[in-house]
Image (cartoon, rainbow, N blue to C red; front, side, top):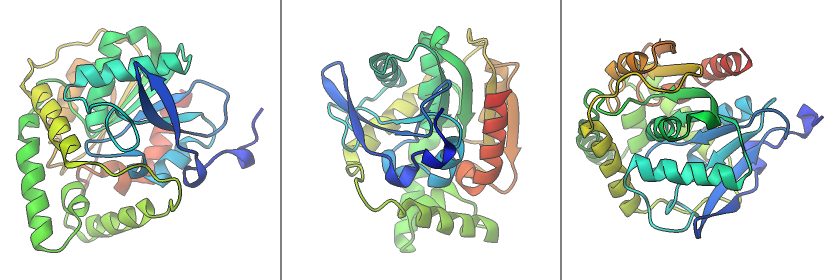
Length: 283
């Protein structure tokens, strides 16, 4: 058995590539090799370096964690996808290339939308589902994400601030500190970094979210495994009403809403998220 002292941490995880349908998809592996792996899908506009080290290191303490990139993003090849269905196709192809027959699935924001499409297409592959700061197809106000993101980015630029802090965190003292700390953590990894995210990636992924929001509202899902839903009460990008909408799609889901937390609720509450997710996965 792999000793926890030998566990690979986010700072040192090698960026690898996986051949999927004619293109190379970047990914990183953390944690011990045994047990049911956890596939993690990141938010819109994110590459592999945008994972919060505290979260992925915490989850990888006793579990194999695979951070999977998106086609056309960072060091992954091919054309960026503009629909959740296509991104889910890539995820399913990637896990099969990794020879994984069963795994847990962690989706953050847009990654949670992709994760829902994965369990719609191939529910037999997923043991447990974790959805953070995300919404179902047709969820409330998801079609407003482009407007919110563009407006927040412009306001941040005028104030010479980082858009992530304005879009992901509340303006309370706690929210501002959490945003500052998160940005600092993202700079901890100083080697073997992923490629930059091009503007075209944001356009395509915002289009995918818009289409997801325009779709008919999801009804009860076929997926029968355990589901954990985490959200922030002040999320402007994916309003908190989406947590209730997800609870209707997955009636047995455990739902937690963090107070004074925006779209970056997981980053602001990383310790609580690690505790909740690990308890859920070991249940």
